[in-house]
Length: 469
Image (tube, rainbow, N blue to C red; front, side):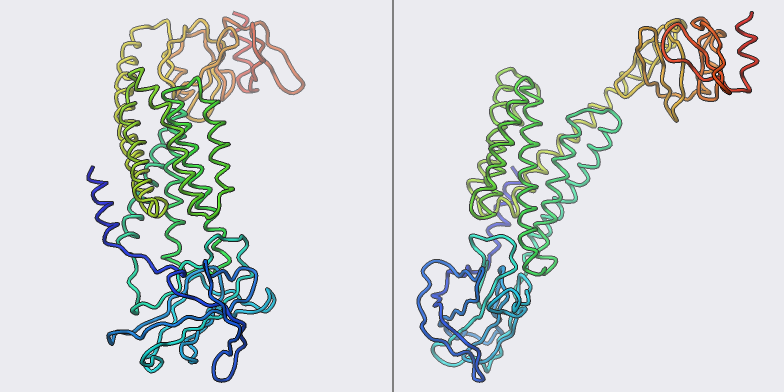
């Protein structure tokens, strides 16, 4: 609950730039002139400013500031721009032009300081020349902001700080689940590591606009990456919840998630694509969570409550979902799961240690410690032991094999006398040997089953002597 309260407080204290549609813009025919641009045939723009694929001259009338604070024209969007106030040039962002060859792409955001002498009493005429030939994709709202605000414009540092805290926590969770997967090879830990990783990457990509004023052609790549990462998180969420609470329907639900969430790429506007990808993923995860609640599965109620909270926040603050609340919600799910997993693994390790202690009293069996747990293998069923760095492979009767977390040297002293070191990386059970055979310059030891074992030249005489006894 405290996370939601923080979210509401931060949201209420932040403001966004005015949209381009907040001004009454006119579209004109224009040409540069020595005394400023010469405009003609101006017509009111009814919807939004769209310079994509063309050169666009626009103008509007604004009132002078009511105080002495310095002002600047802020322009944000996928366009190069040039601005004048009352015929005085304010500056240029790139070089707008009538074609892709003539245009020099500018930055996604630009600030043009307005000198005090540029203002005049009454109405002031603001003119912009825009062009956008290098956007890569067509945007439903190409211009994020064209507005005059006090200079310098205060950055949303609170939003950036919280986003980075969430990103750091998610990266730590991704590392933690990655380590757990390396130790235990559990599918759920790998899925959770992926969820934490893509959410952290999206937080970083989302913050690039604040940290780095990139050239506007990169905006298409950034927005595409944000949607792709959101879709990946949503699909992984469905995979995790379904695998945990409704595993028999995992294939069906994952296929449905891939189709439904992937279809959001067809929606207009990247904000809509991203928000719908997240919300559809959460909605598809609800039925498996409900099934878990009905079966009284552990963790089903908290999971369902989290999904409900996600949908409430998404519907209550849709404009902040991809920018801010999503990262907090992702962290609030994944971090508790990481703590639960660490506690569970600690309990398993204690149980495993108790099993190993009990197994010491069974001299006729070898205690096999692996990532999956503890298993007792009858020594008489061991055909050979093959070394592999810090692990050994035990080849058993019937074609089975087990990985054991031990070194070959340590096992040599534990196994009975009928086990002999025949190679620097092989111990053979002489009770299962059929013959010693020469193969060119090498020697091979054939057992009652399985592949022949290599015999080193230095150990060959000792092996021959042991077999003749």
